Amino acid sequence: MKLIQRAVPLALIAGLGLTGCTSNAQPSSATGTEAGGPIAVSSTDTECTLTASEASSGTVTFNVKNDGTQVTEFYLIASDGNRIVGEVENIGPGLSRQLTVIAGPGSYTTQCKPGMVGDGITQDFTLTAGANGTVDANRVALQEDAVKQYQEFVAQEADALEAGTEEFAAAFAAGNVAEAKALYPAVRMHWERIEPVAESFGDLDPILDAREADLEEGQEFTGWHRAEKDLWVTDASYTKMTAAERQEIADGMVTNTKELVSRAKEIEFTVDALSNGSKGLLDEVATGKVTGEEEAFSHTDLWDFAANIEGAKTAFEDLKPLLKGTNDELSATLTKNFTELETLLAKYEKGDGYVLYTDLTEAQIQELSAAVDALGEPLSQLTSEVVK
Image (cartoon, rainbow, N blue to C red; front, side):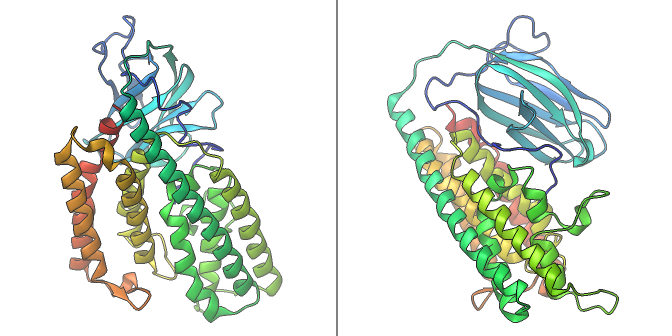
């Protein structure tokens, strides 16, 4: 989980239907950008420079390069300051990432976030009404099918998350440590499968999933990882919660999860949200799960790892028909790399779950990390293919 500074009630929604999507043609005033081409973004430690401040609506592509010394990320945010239209994160110094979104006419804000903390560097960005090109009806139907299938997946996982959270919260509040420990990683898999959706609600995500190490000054430690700490930490220097304190955490988890589930079912996805979300899940694996930072007390990171991969693969499988006949090579590569990563992860299955992260050797961690990286590069190409 990464902290988001803004309240984000409807992130991942591009706000357009699937018809009439066109490539972003830059107006003549957009100096430094070839008409019809991607918008180049240079992110440094102190600046966020774009080669254009406006473009035509429809399919919009940003080529983001990190010219600074810190890991950075880039956002396109709607005019209300709340809705994240699209984002790319974990861009290391000297590296580049592409962000492709479907967005309608209007005022937006771009944001680079050096160090991936704080409010970042923002500037205004405008999308003008673009002329709709010829739309392939068959392709639109495939896009609509992909979105429908993924929305059903999100609803199913959201319902399971709500039911599981209620069960976990009851065990935790009652002080049933063994039961709560058993439920913890299994229930969290429902969260992790749809993590881009969960993270999109910036007012709920931090109070449900913030890690203690990521808390900012004055921020209260609540949610899943607060319960995790109380269940697993046995150090004499740590004071266990009282029954009343456990009940308060449990009640908050249930109430906020119910709100998150309600909102998640109202999201109207577009194909770019599926593909960008798939890559986002892989980024979560690379930056938190494969490093052992997510489950700092329980060390159940491999449950999260597996769920992130399952969620990413589901989005890809829903989008896969859009690659048939247009980029069969990418489809085959992604299918192969997902299979290889799943096969590797299966080596660490134990009973109904996985071995603890602390049971892995450094060589095994590096092998998992390499497999994640191998999948990440081709997966980053998916959005530009499915929005055509």
